[in-house]
Length: 308
Ligand SMILES: O=c1ccn([C@@H]2O[C@H](COP(=O)(O)O)[C@@H](O)[C@H]2O)c(=O)[nH]1
Image (cartoon, rainbow, N blue to C red):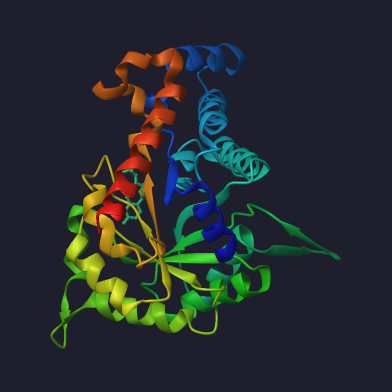
């Protein structure tokens, strides 16, 4: 899957991933109204509204991008109905030949991690059959529990030819509380980066490992260091746009060929119609605003990469 991701990035010339993080407040009135007419102001109604919203955006942007990153929390808030919308979104994106990165941030003791890995990336044994459940291509994983929490994910990825992005340095303001703590004089994120590089050895695609890392766009100096520590780890870079990251900050996350990283924007794309720059599209044409925001993001990142 890492080779497919890289090939799709080359084909689209867009090292970007669109985050499908649909809060109900981003869904235009006309869509909410229709879903509520059919299902009422219920969890089912909300789940239908976010699914219709996602579908319209995907239809407008799938030809421009290699990948999407649905954030499972945005769906889980609507319970089972939300998870059904998550599943529909994953399936629909795969029909459109998009790579799906499930932002699930799981990780637990070994036996529990194994169940997460099977449910999201692998196949669950039911009697004589093996059946895929969520079936994303990559997932995000939290390394806090150490090697035995990660290994089941790596094993399933090897079997299914899928991949991981392991949290190394997150984009949020408090990420330094633990991640930057000095251990024997070096920040903790460096140790995690070294571990990710180690976990990825022996799990290589053609040029990058399918065991990748998450490094936030909001700490570009740290991104530069981590690129050196994990030369073969593909980096998922959240924090662009709504959290302040810009193309110019991100050049050191990439290799000399402009590969090695994929930058995420969620609110900046899916809620673009609410921003002043794109407000002329109006709520009816929200998906056209998203398309325009994708085009701007691709230009911003490729201009930055061309300049270096
Ligand atoms: O360090 C991290 C890890 C994950 N995320 C997730 O990415 C998106 C960002 O959304 P924006 O709207 O583009 O800010 C969201 O799903 C986060 O949970 C992150 O931001 N930082």
